[in-house]
Each structure stands twice: as structure tokens, then as C-alpha cells.
Length: 209
Image (cartoon, rainbow, N blue to C red; front, side, top):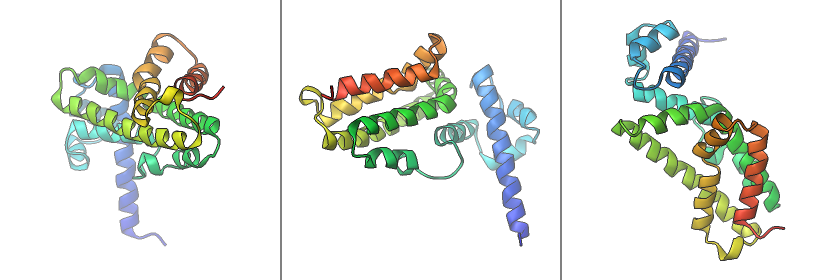
């Protein structure tokens, strides 16, 4: 039997989800700086105080929206503990690791690329978002380093490439900037980017034929 607390928790979670969805729509269409708390409240059909109580700041809403877009849900599970990452790392076949790695990145960018572009674009004029973008880049590099270490245990890296260099290369190839350039600006199909990324990572990181 559900308790009153369960009901309040479910309503609070639903309200937060509605706020995040509204903010995501406004951030990606109007831009971060042009989107006010008042506009988010109107879009989400809640009071401004509800937003301040739930998140505190506009930056906190954006951070939550990005985290959820990257994860695909609102569960507090770090990227390196996600099932797709664990499966890629555990796969003994280096080609399959790369395929799984790229597929995971593709799924993330399908959801999160527009929001990440909002942060990157606004970072030049907003110190808080500049730090948010830098933190996101650091996190992506940490993930790519774990993948590079696993790959180096399964196959030779290209021309004596170090793990750090492999991580930097993968960070560049599998970046939201590259995805946005090719898919959103150059009109590539999502599947085409995914196939290109698998080929590029394989060729530039490994000696696999």
C-alpha cells in the first residue's frame, strides 16, 4: 500500500520532470540567456517559487536537464556504471568494444547534443556555463580514458600511441561538436555518423586491419 509520502515523492518527481522538459524546449529554441525562470514556469505550468524550491537557479535546471539527457533517465547512476559502458568494457573483442562505445555515444548525442550546444554557445559570455562546459569536457575525457585503457589491453594502439593520446583522439572524434557539425549542420543521417565514428576510432586508435 502506498503511503502519503510515496504520493508526494511521485508528484514532486513529476513536477521536476515537467520543469526540465519545459526548460529544455526553451533553452534549445530561444537560447539560455533569453530564457527566464518566469518563461520556464509558464511553459511548465507551475509557479516561479516551485522552480526556485525545486532547483534554486536556472543553471541548476540546465545542469539537471543535461545530466538526464546524457543518462536517458533521472537515476543517479554515473556514466561509467551504466550498463552499456560496462558491457563495452567487458567485451573481449576490441572491435565490439569500439562499436558499443560509439553506439553509446550516438544514443547520448541523439538526446543531449542540442542542450550541450546551448552550453557551448553560451559559455563564451557566461562564466558559470564556461565552467559547466569545462566540467563536461573533463568528464567525457575521463570516460574516454577508461575506454582507451581497456582497448589497449585488448589490442595494440596505433603506432605506439599512448593511452592519453588515444583518449584525446576519441574525445575529439566522439565529441558533441563533431556530432553537431556533421548531423545537424551538414545533414548526415545519425546512422551515417555512427558508422563513420566506428571506422574513424578503429583506424586512428588501433592497428586493427
